[in-house]
Figure 1 (tube, rainbow, N blue to C red):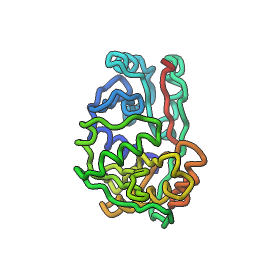
Figure 2 (tube, rainbow, N blue to C red):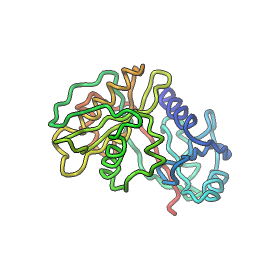
Figure 3 (cartoon, rainbow, N blue to C red):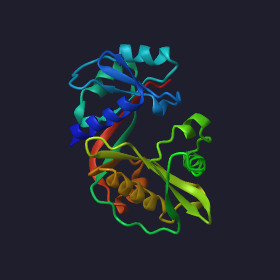
Figure 4 (cartoon, rainbow, N blue to C red):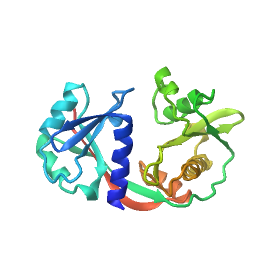
Length: 238
C-alpha cells in the first residue's frame, strides 16, 4: 500500500508540474506559484542514498526553499541522509485512506463546482482564507479543473474541498477548508465526504489525505478515513 500511494502521488505531480532531476531526487515545480508547499522534491524511485547537494542547488537557483514530501516507509534512509545538509523535519503526517465515504450531516448545502462556474473564485477564496492565505489569482481560477465542492450557508460560500485526478484507481482529497466562523458544525466532514464520493464517481476505489493534526484527523475519521501510513516533510530552515 505504501508503494501504491507513493507511486500515485508521484504520478499526479509529474503530470501537472515541471520535473527537475537533482541527483537522487526530483524537484517538481508548480507553474503558477513559488509557494514552498507547492514546490517540492520526491526521492527517485529505487534510490537508496543521496546527500541532497544537487537538490539544494536546484531549489535555490529558482528562489525556492529546498523541501521534500514523500511516504516515509518507502524511503527510510532520507531523513538521516539529508541531516548533514541542514534538512529538518517540517512535519511527520498521518496518511489516511478511505474506500467508502460515510454520510456527514451539516447545515451547509454541498454543491459541485464545475470548471468556469461563477462559484470557482468564491470557493477557492474561502478555502484559501480558511488556511490564512490571500485570494487566488486569475490564472489559478482559469486553470481550475472543476474537481471542487463548495459549502454554502445562506447562499454564501463558507468552505470548499477538492480532489486530484484519478490515476490507478486513486485520488487525493485536498484543500478541505471552512471559514473560522462556520467551523465545528460538521461542514468540513460533509465536504470531505462529498469530495470523496465525487472521486469515486470518477473511477477511484481508494481516496487518501493527510490531516494537519489530530483534531482534523477526527473530522476525516467521521467521513470514513482511517490511518494507513506516514508522510515525511523535510526542509532547510531558510
